Image (cartoon, rainbow, N blue to C red; front, side, top):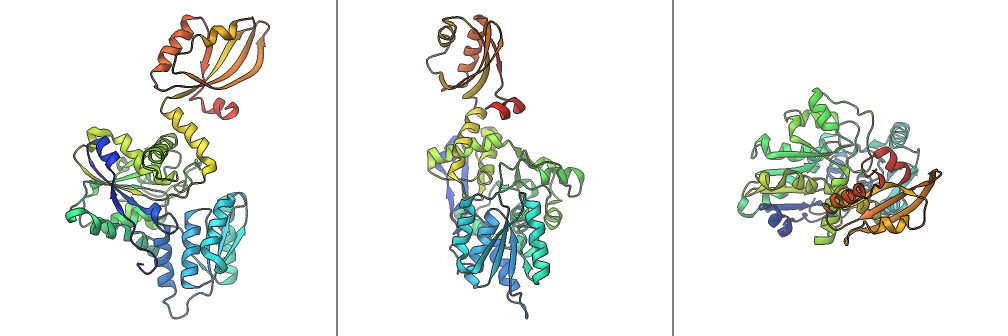
Length: 404
């Protein structure tokens, strides 16, 4: 693998270490050639598939993200043709990067509106052409390739010490299966913490049920880890762990970590890459103080067109932005009276007249940003004292998704 790319750094993060009173190290997989760890499993799969007596003449994968880019990079490295199936809805940025990594060795086919349709088309194509399907996580060679991260960590830790805690994101389970398998002789089961998006808890539900289960619905915001069913081989490797060791991270909490790392460290993370860092905030100083912690930063393929949405989610989760529906009287001076209720640190970020709900009143959507979350306690108290009719819809998923 060193002939393909150098080891990714294990960096002590001064900001996070000081924040939690711990010795926190980040394994920077966002600094691989394809800005994610997926290149490792792909390389190992191809290395073995091409070593057989009669190797396949064509390779196929289905992916709209990091797996496709790792696959493409490795196809070009070995000089073998590959076909990447992507949903029609895949952003052009991801299509362009996959094409850039694979060059003349890659053909991209856009099929279906959803990944399941795309994956089925890739399977049918591979069967028809006699091509070799390269799975994203549910294969022994993929798992073995991802385990090289653990090998590097053990060689990179100062003084060859052992971490008290290894925090890793989980999607299909290839990364976590490889890491825990390699480190099992050195670390106890309780030294591992798995992180999943709250909207895609495939490992946690499988451990609770004692077998892989298919989630009825998945939130795709954390696209690099939004998997409806943990891989079969991956579940076998992880079944010895407790469901309590799987921490579910709210999607908006991940946004806070992404914004924090961008502003403080200048590190660009994708949502899946922020999972382990968001877990640090959830664990808190009491559970981290004095410990040596390794957090896997799994990827940094972030489309900056998503930045406004990430910032919005982060502010709402941090309590620094709220949305209200106001019931204002239809009289001169009513808006001025409302503005006088705002504090010196409150800023109107959105103001939209919705409709006249009664003859003498109108409904207004208003978004307010502030510098400290406790400012909203004082603002609501002034609303109540002034007899203002209002409803806080910040956490009302149905209403906010329709009108915000």
